[in-house]
Image (cartoon, rainbow, N blue to C red; front, side):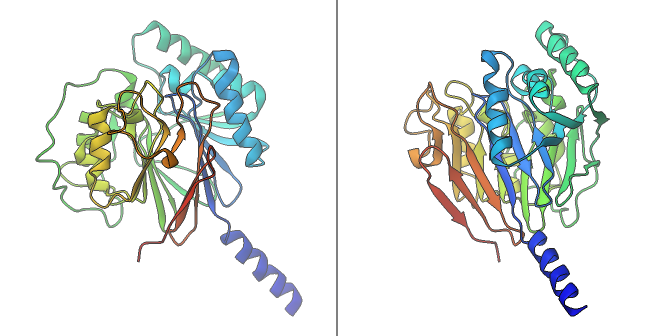
Length: 334
């Protein structure tokens, strides 16, 4: 009996000691982020572009093989622009996707968006389909995934411990409203014990203000995946500076995202330790790009190098660059 109890205790300890793994996949200025929970369940956020001879779905498949996944348990499509949903049909032919999650029907009157949404609807017939709203959770075992934004709505009740006034609202002016799918992005906060990462898809500036002002409903995060690839339609100080990330990761392309002014807002965020980029941004030059060690792809025509984040339950984490094998560790906050 004592031996059985010892074995059981060891197994429980081993399970809880497993890290959270996050792969930031290079889909050349789109988004595809693979989250693998300590439980072994997976969440893929977006699928990159269609076309390019299946380039993006192939890069996603390479990550699923590295993570030793037999299926994708949950696929969250943040919105229906081609750089986020375009690769879904091809990917679904390569690996089983058990659950499809999104913000609901497309409302953008664009031929391209309508085409991609139609293909997505055909694809999600192959699995379970769920429409989420702010306040919902996505039930990936081993992590807590809270939906903060969806279909143009934002969470109205602050999360536990996050009811402080946002001092950055007063100095952040509004911009023109965005009528596109970007403003309807499904955004999530992913929590693994003491570690938190924020991904709001392509949520645009005014919706960020609606989410974050006058009260910050999120609190602070360890890692912020830059909204909208670092384009200046997103990434307001009212969001970026208020969530106070220790590390930011920019899923930009060589010639998409990484706008100098948006890059600077992130770089100036109080308490930011490092900014990592999937690509060297051609527009930014040396002044508005981080050192090469922190960039996965330094050439415009690349081979799809990626960034991998590994987080422990105590809040410590590492970021690893597949191109140069550079890794940096971040201690848990006290």
